[in-house]
Image 1 (cartoon, rainbow, N blue to C red):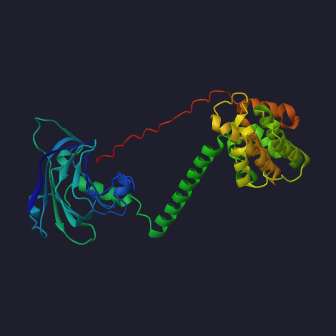
Image 2: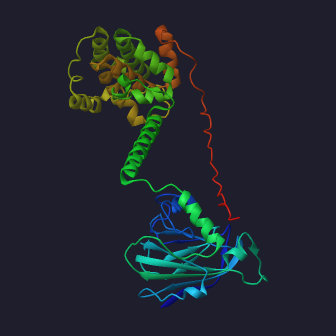
Image 3: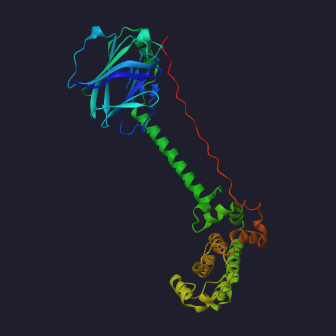
Length: 393
């Protein structure tokens, strides 16, 4: 036999706890209801694997407590104790924590494994509902004995106090634990809710406050970037129809190339003309690899100095006409409109582009653009207060 603890231990609301779980934050909250589901002995709740909810007579203060571990079931001196109960306990952690109500704890050198736990009590009725201060005499005392054993039914070995009878009745009123089928169904519902929460969070990250249609969700390209910046413009563009959408794409490509001076380059000018006439782009713009090579090799492109582009590096300014041109030619006019708007807005600033496109296409008339500074998000906190269990009367 080894003594793991022998001394005064602080209790509050007539409670102390033992926890042998690797991660105490996982699983059900170890409150009275969860710990006493399906339990019959009353003085100890062991419904949560790896956790014991232990009740005392003293309401608040210190009580004499001894914790022992035995190699086999110890002999029982029943005459020395008023109440004796037994439950099974499964420990996964390398040590078991003997925990006070406020969270302070003592580590117990109890190896992982399956145990039988015997709880022996005396003086519970005399101490019931009272507080014990430093100079007060001992009224109630407690002993916890552990020994290796497979799981067994809870057992009341001896019951003589009104307190033990009261808590046995309380435990009997706690609903039984859910069936495996109910647990599986609850997990399925919780997983679905968590997945939906993640989906909504990801959608807010991608789209901002804009709630896109299924059409836009599946569109691809840069639609979410435009919608996150200007939800009203995104909605109006979707509703404008294919002819207006194609015209928006051509306008955005033309605007960008004019702003950078690249519309003076003959093959770029020809590409803009083809866009506006609705005919396929000619080489090199009909092939991605050839287009990039032409952009890099053409000295007229490298030497053009356009107006300063907001937050666009020098190297990127010359490359932006490529997506402005080629993405504006996308076979889906809605995709073409969004991608060309996004490419064009990297130039002189997205607010200018979005304002001008509304002026150019009255069908896109919408409420004012969002403010320059985003509003601060409000963070709420939920404070959970521990509720004391009822006391025996």
